[in-house]
Amino acid sequence: MESPQAIQERIVREIERAGDSFDQFDFLLSKAAELPEMPEERKIADVLVKDCQSQVWLYLHDIDGRPVIEADSDTLMIRGTIQILKDMFDGQPPQAVVDCDVNYIQRTDLAYAFDSKRVAGQAAIVARIKEFAKGLCA
Image (cartoon, rainbow, N blue to C red; front, side, top):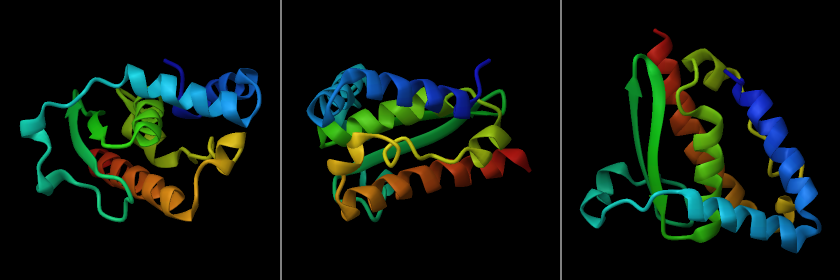
């Protein structure tokens, strides 16, 4: 199984191959289209991620001790980031999730599309996922 860090490296290469910053943003939107939509009845306040400019509903559970992410957002660019995080972390060993330095945005032209509030929101999503994975390590 490819590690979260290796998956991130592959994603960075794919983003960079997309072209300029507009093409890289289009790549992110194409990732958003891969994320299954969450039924409206599951979009409840209890699972909203705080510190996000967008609304992000995040359900975390495990299968055989490995994290599984179910999530949605009301913003396409954040849906794209969620799908990238799913690609990186779904089914991974929990310690690999905890140890992964998520930095694909900063390493690509996507950094131009993410203002400080969006960066903080993505960090809040990653923090929740890592906290869940840390609990699976115990």
